[in-house]
Length: 332
Image 1: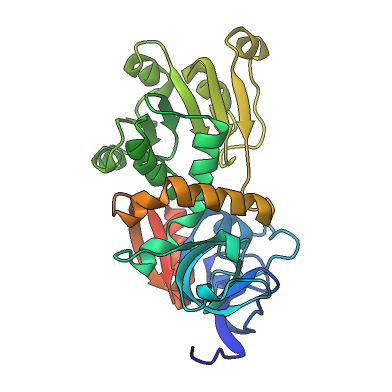
Image 2: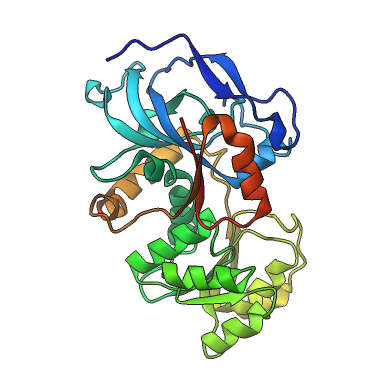
C-alpha cells in the first residue's frame, strides 16, 4: 500500500452560508479508531442533509467530523484495531455520519459494502445514503412487500430514483410525484408505474383514480407540513405513512379519528443519528437482499452530474436549483 499522507484537501466551512463557503482547505488525515477503516476517497455523494448542514440547520451528530458528506466510495488504505486484514486494499462504498467531502475519510467497517466489478466508483458513491434510507423506511418501517402500491414524493430526487429502482426489483407498484411534466416523463422512463405532476394535478385525486379508489399501501414523504393530511387521504385502510424529511414544514394537523377509523400508521425515521450497531445491521441486511442485484448489474443509481471536489459549491447550487434527476456526485 502507498504511504498515507498526514494532510489532505477537504471541504470544511468555518461558518454557515451559501454554496460559496464550500472551499478546499487543508485538514489532517483522520485516524481510524477501533472497528474503523480509513478510505482513500474516489467519489462522494451529495445529499440534501449536506445542504442543510452548510446552511447551519443540521449540525453533525456528536463525534462526527465537521466536514460534510454522508457517503463515499474508495479504497481501504488503513485499518483500525479489530478490523479483518482482508479489508486492506479493498474497493468499498460506505455510509458515514460525516467527513465524505475529503481525500480521506474514516468509516465503521460494518457500514462498508464491497464495490463489485463493473460498478464505477462514482456510481458506488451514489448508493449508500439513499439505499439505506429507502430500505429502512420502505421495507422495514412501511413493511412494503411484493404486490403493494406505494406513493413516493420527489420522484426524481436521489431518494425517489432509488425507490423506483427498488420497487422494480421487489415487485411494488410505485406512484411518484414531481414538479414538471419533463420530470414525470423521466420518472416513467426510470420505471415508475405512474408519475403525477403535483403543480398541475391534485395528487390525492390522481392516486384515488389510479388505485380505483382503494388507495396505496404506503406513502414515503419528505415534504411534511400540509402534505401529511393529504397523504393520509391517499392511503388504503391499514396504510402506513412514513416521514423521512420535512422540507415543507415540521408540523402537521391530522384528522385523528380518520387514523382510528381506517387503522392508519404514522411513523418516520432519521438515519444519520442512529448508532453504528443499527447501521451495521442494515448494511448486513442490504448485503443479503439488495447487493446481489448490484453485483448482477440490475441495480444502478441514476447519476445526474459529477463535479470535482473543488467545485462542491457548484454541486450544491445544482441541488438547490432543483433541476437535477438522480444523484449529484463529487469526484476526488
